[in-house]
Structure formats: structure tokens, C-alpha cells
Length: 311
Image (cartoon, rainbow, N blue to C red; front, side, top):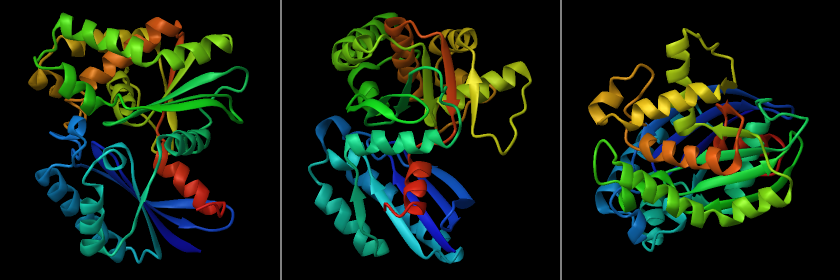
């Protein structure tokens, strides 16, 4: 049995998952996330800004201390949208290597989508009787996977993540109706391959949101309904009516008011606004009837691949 650490350097949040791994599976030792905002100020300029780079290195120093404390045997460090699209990627990766001794594995959008599916598949939240649309909203990119419980039918990553949408469209707080319309119109055009592929396969009624903003929406719903989530749960249904009520409420609020909402965390309070617009656009365009939330995403998918000897 080995101790493996998977670190997902997301555009908004860095995730650290440490697990005991053997040939049959893994046991989570630590699951930690830290707000870094790697894409802030530079995501649409294809740059990692100096202050963002320092925040990232500071987080990774702490992660390394944690890995040493837990006697980790191997570290798998991955970079996603903000890293793969940055013109100063080499400078950033060199700084990471110098600070930690770790090499960074840059994941393509297609790999990210496939490996998120591997994470979500572990939760049992994907219905077996029909196709579902898996959605992972990151700060730099959004991954879409049309799938059933066994396999991926179609997948694509789009560079329309929350930080990109915020920088491009949201200049008021609370967000204005014209800004919401501009985002929705933009998404309708950008996501034409998604609409076409789903339509050609007969449509889809179930949306499965993985981690991130979906986690927060699930927490808000559970607080409102007095639902206590078991620590062992890997996912949770989010009734469509509940989502719509939460979205209406949050989109009308400013940052301070959103943060005061039971279940909201500071890590999500900014990006959740554009995420709600994206989810509303998906529901309207695809006539979604139900939403499931997976608490597992990329890092759990990567850990599963390590168990199976694929990484």
C-alpha cells in the first residue's frame, strides 16, 4: 500500500487529495481545497499574473509540507485551463519545480473531460437507463460529457469557465439583466457543438454537475430543506425547482448578501453568479428535467487511474 497525493491546480481552486492506494482501490486520508484564483487578471490575456503565481507557489509550499507530514510516496501534480493556455507557462512550471521539486502534468481539455467522468462514475450518480450530461464548471474551462453509467458517448472542453465569463461580461454587482442576457447569448453560440451532438443523439433530460459551484448549490438547498448530508455521501439530487429558486435569489443579490446565504462559502461567492447563468442556459436549451450533483470530480478520477495502473 502506498500513499499517493493528487494535486489539481484549477483556475480558481487548488485541490489536494491524499489517499492510501492498493491494487483494489483507495482510502482517502485527506481532502483539502484552497482558493488561489490562478486566472485572476490574466486568464483572457493568456497570462498567469505575478500575484497569482505567488499565490499558487504559496499554496503548493503548504501542500508539500502536508505531503511530507503524511509521508506521501508519490505526488501527481496537474495543471488545467489556466496553465495550459498561458503564454508564460514555462516560467510558472519552472518556478514550481524550483520550489517543490515536482513536475507538472498539463492536462488537455479532452483528457480533463474523460478523467472527470472517471471521478463521477465512482459516485453512482449517473443513471443507468438513459444518457446524461455531465458538466464540470471550472474557472478557465467547462467540461461537458454525454455519457451513460458505463461509458462516454461524447465529450468536449470549452474555454468558457467562470473567471473568463466574469472578466468578459460581469461588471456590476448584483449582475444586471443585460449582462445576464449577454452571457446567455454568448454561450448559446459558443456551445453549438454541444447542442448539435445532444440533439443528434435524441436529447438528454438529466444534468449531472460535478463539484465546484454545484457543491455549493447543493449545500444551500440542503440548508433550506433541513437535510443533513452524510459524510460518506458521494453525491446528492438537486431538485430543479429548488435550483431555480436559489438562482433567482442569488442573481438578485450583491456579494455581501450572497455570502450571508446559509451554505454559501467565500470560495464560491463570486464565480457562482456566472455559473448560475450557464446552468440556466443549459436547462433552457436542453429542456433539462433533473439535476444530480457529484461530489467527486477530476482528482478522484485521477486517483482511480493510479489504482488501475494507468497513471
